[in-house]
Image (cartoon, rainbow, N blue to C red; front, side):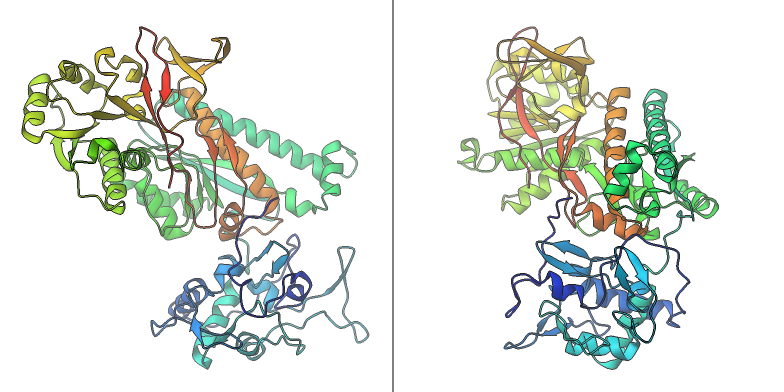
Length: 585
C-alpha cells in the first residue's frame, strides 16, 4: 500500500533524515496482527477526565483551554496544535509508517504491556537471560517519556518525538486516556466474525434497494468463501498461499463477515430511536452503503455521536461538515455542483463589469444544497452574495415569472436550481432580449431530462456535471447512453449517470465493497473503528464507475469533490461538450 500521510514531525530541528530504526525503539513497536489479550486494568478515571485526556491527545488542548506546549531543542516552546499526539500516532493510536519514518503504536494494549522480543514473527518468552525489549509503561515512566524523551529502559527517544510541557495533572489525564485507547476491539467484532449493517428507509425504490442488497450479498459470499480457504490448512489453495506470502496471520483475514439490514420506518425524526435500538440489539463495527428518502443527516448524527463509521451511503444530500469524522461520502452531492459553478464563474469576463448573479431556487432540499454550495464557495472567493429569488413548491418557472424577474434584476448570470419542470419556461430565453450571458443548471437535478434542454437556448446554457466524462457521450432513449470515440465508433453502452436506477445503485455499492475489501486487509487485525478510518485516510485513489476517481486523505470525508461544466451540442441527438476540466477545491 502506498502511504501518503505527511508526518508533521519530520522537519523538527535536528531530526535525522531516516529514523525508521530509532522510531522502532521509541514508545513501542509497530503492532502486528492482533491476538487475544486480557483486558487492561481499569484506568479509574471518570468519563469527564477521559474526555479531557482525549482532547489533549487529539487536539493538543489542555483542560485550561490553552494549547499544549512543546519544547524544541534550541528553540522556545511552541504551541502543540501541530504536535498533538493524534497528528502522528493517528486517532486510533495504531501509528503509521511513512516515508521511512515509523510512528509507533501507543494504544493501551501496547504501551502498558511489555514489548516481547520477536524472532521470525514469534514472541520469545522473557526470562532472566532474555528480558523484554521494553518493559510496560507506568504513569511515571510515561510522564518521563512525554517530558524528557526517555523510555522505561532509559533509552533516548528519537528527535521526531516532541518533548511536551505537561504538569502532573495533565500528564495523568493523558495517561488515563491512553490506557483506554484501542485497548479492546470495537463493538461488532467477535472472536471469529465482524458484523456490519446497511440502513434503508421505507419509501426507497425497490429497484435500487434490491440492486444494493444483491451486490452486498454477492460480495459477502465471495469474501467468506475466501476466508474459509485462508483458514483451511489442507486446502493448499492459491488464495491461502497468497495470504501466507504476504505474511498475513489468520486473524488478519480470517474473521467471517456478516451484514444485517436496518430498516427505518416512519418520519425521519423517529429514525434516531430506531437506530439506537438496532445498535443495542445487534452492535455493528460499521455501516456500509445504505439509502434513505431525503437527507442522510439523521443517520449521520447517529454515527457521529456513537462513533460508528459509515462508508459511502448512497445519498446526494450528505451532511456538509469540515469537522465531523465518522461518515465517508462518495461526494458532496448537489452541494459540490454549486461549488463547481462558483469556481467556474470566478474571473469570467461576463462578470468583469460587476454584473449581478441571480439564483432561482426551488423550495426543495436539492435546490437548497445547490444554492448553499454556490453561496459558500462564492463567499470564499471574495465575491458579493448572489441575489436569490425563491421558487415556492408547486409554482412553475413559467414564461411570465421569468420575464418579470429578468426585467427586475437584469442579471449577467442566471443560476436555475430547479428540476426538469423548469425547462419549458426557459425557452423564454431564446429571444435574446435581456437574456443573461450564461445560464446554469444541475445535470444531477435534471436527471435524464438534461438531454431535453431546448436547442434554442443551448448556446448560453451550462450544466454542472459531477460524473465521469468520456470523449463522446450521447443519449440512447432516455436512460441509456453510448460512448463513442473521435471517429464516431461506438465504444460501449451503459446506463446514464445520475438517473438513479439499479445500475447506479450497483455502481455505488461496488465502490463500497471495493474500499472495504482493501481496508480489511490493511487493518492488519487491529479491529478498532477509528483505525478503520485512519487506514482509509492513507488509501490510494480508487477508480469509480460513477465519478471516475475517488480520492482519500486523513481528514477528507468526501471522496469526489468537484464537477465538470458541460454544454449540449445542437442537433436532435446532442452530445455533451466539456467546457472545463475537473473543477475541485
